[in-house]
Length: 313
Ligand SMILES: [Zn+2]
Image (cartoon, rainbow, N blue to C red; front, top):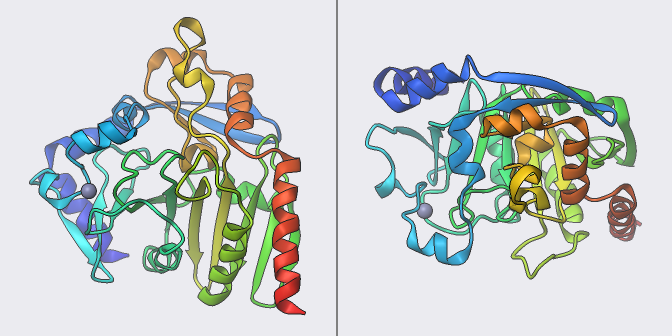
């Protein structure tokens, strides 16, 4: 995507804060940890404290200036208009060496169901990037302002590892739904070469999830990428926003607020003490707390298969 390359180059040349943060990212510390059957990276990234420690309760949101609204953004930040109502911006606090934030122009709540098609369009436009969606209680630091993010593909281990653990649930000529037997955090994947099929399978999935904690939508993280003719969409249903260790005092505390990138196999620790301390068992515990268990995911799959069977017989 040449126009995005130009945007990134221009922004790094003209915007000091972004330039410094992308430079710092090159020296960021990373360690690898084997958890269950997957390899996770842990990234010590101090600039992400803003996101990990973001207060997302109603009062805090109402009293802060929304950082995704155009009038509150840094003067240096420029964007590319997409489909007339999204703006593709560089994220000044990166996790990826190429990291975009893509807010809706209007200040309107974070919801996936009416925007999943847009997510597919964006991943088509931004080939070479993986799009991601953090639900309002699943890592979004601006749950009151609809947005996606995108990072260069190939950075999150799960993007390539999932095929090793997949089992087909629904298969059609142009679209398939897979169960991925990742331990301890199983998830689902849609593969489709048509947008209509991808949306159809996503809707079955969405309708098969429960609403938790009087939430506005079923809790989830979504990763989407397009490779030439075909979309791959990773679906991580969630049951909890932040793990207990996020709120613990003293030694037990780990300031980790899991979102799509963590689900994708890169755990972000904004604090050095957490980076040094975190082990496989911590990541395993956090994933077990916030993701569905294999049994819980199977229940969702049963519902999807029933709905699919009724619609296709
Ligand atoms: Zn806003």
